Length: 305
Image (cartoon, rainbow, N blue to C red; front, side, top):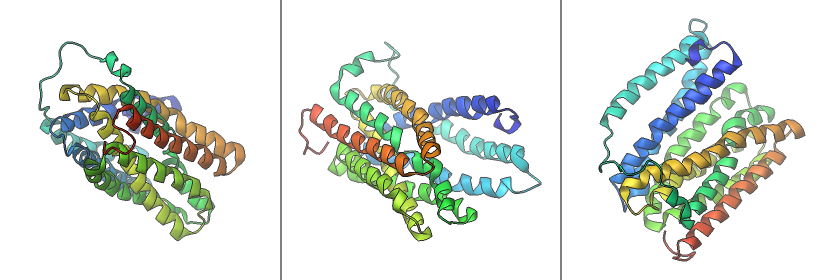
């Protein structure tokens, strides 16, 4: 549908609303099904499951750049080719996913989950993390061009970021099963927040590329570990999908408002200093709330949870 859009509102409906709904309906049932098959190694399994989106984040920006500048294709056929690729990948994936346990039949939502302090704390932490950590995904190429990087090289920064995110989703997930999922999420949050604070001081091409890789690794850990932390709260594995769905539905509101806030700060101050301070501070506070989730669990701040 995006390939035939001609007006701004049509792009909002097709790419924004329909794309967002369909992406959520694709990702989280798959994550919930994966979580039912694992317990001790659940974070590693979820990290590997969600790491596929990093590979897509490497391939599609490069492919889009090549196809959009091809006069024989144009925007319409570029979008259609991408949709055909997605269809070819998603059809066998969707047919292969099976839940391990039969679905719960008594209720659709579980409002009682919001009475659990650890669950509320993890949702709060996820909200703050998603509010702040998206800024390089939207503005890193623009920032790099403003610091003298060529447009061609800057167009590869998001692919570099997503390539490093693959390892950030897998390796911390493996470590989380040994050292504690909340512990690793806290480390990922603090390291991501510090990197955001450092971002405006990075001026050379080499440092920007290194920053892109480091940020991809740390932010990738946040993406995979949020789901792993939400999935460890329910006592009944059949409720994993509901807990993840309700929690990420709340946190996704932050992903909606975070980038526009950063954009307003960049436009208002004609630079990235204020936006990095806002985003870095929000992500660090999210890391502190992860510590509160550990305390709310009743096992103490130093427990491997």
